[in-house]
Image (cartoon, rainbow, N blue to C red; front, side, top):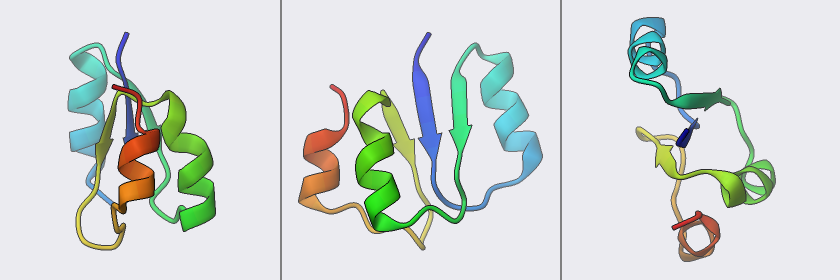
Length: 64
């Protein structure tokens, strides 16, 4: 199962939709940069909106 990390606020219907598609969702709408660095390593995808800044370091740690 693919793991998706969501780090900005989204509607509950969006989260439920992804879960119904079979994704393992971790939802941290208030994640700090340091917490994100630790959490992103075992995620397959990252969903952000405007609050979370995806830096080169975050991109490198995201599992391919």
